[in-house]
Amino acid sequence: MTDQAGPRPINPMLKSALEFGPLLAFFAAYLALKNRIFTIGGTEYEGFIVVTAGFIPVFLIATGLLWKLTGHLSRMQLVTAVLIVIFGGLSVWLNDDRFFKMKPTLIYLLFGTALGIGLLRGESWLRAVMEGLMPLRQEGWMILTRRVMLMFFGLAVLNEVIWRTMSTETWVYFKTFGLTAAVFAFFMTQGSLFKTYAIEDEAEADKPAE
Image (cartoon, rainbow, N blue to C red; front, side):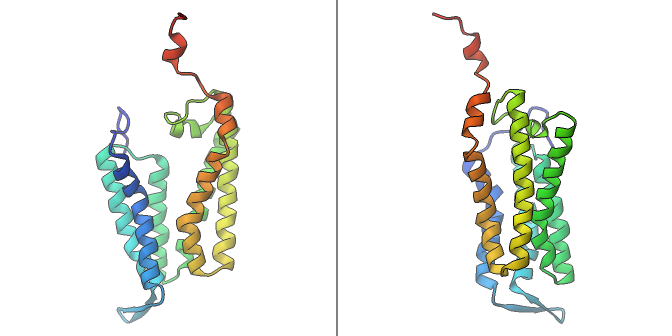
């Protein structure tokens, strides 16, 4: 699901809406339905399970629109979509919210393990995903990849601690805002690395001195 010429540009606001809209919709729906019980086919379902059932098609529709508009989906987006279908579906099918709560743990473990395998091979697989956003020298990519790998493993552990020891509502707030804020804060703290290992614009480097 990639375009040979790379992703087609779309309105940044629309892109953000498609990427974060389903999660915010999940959060809003959970707040509205968290204390309700729904009887479907003779089985009682808590609001969380019903919201999870609605989240799966909404997420897939948003992802499909993003692919149609840009002609591109990253491996991370594809893996996330597959795990949402599998673990969200298990939660709904078995009427057990634990499967959906485990999903972020598995996503972060998979991404962290993949980056670790690349590092063992002397490669930065993060570079293949983010090189267009942050042009760095190879040493910089290797350092950043190690740090991102550790961040993923740390977030996996944190998700496990929160969903196993705290309320569903606390986990929903953490999933909606905490994880996003943690990733944002991580990259904000990498400014010195980006500055140290940044590659100067080739056009500027090739420009003759006046």
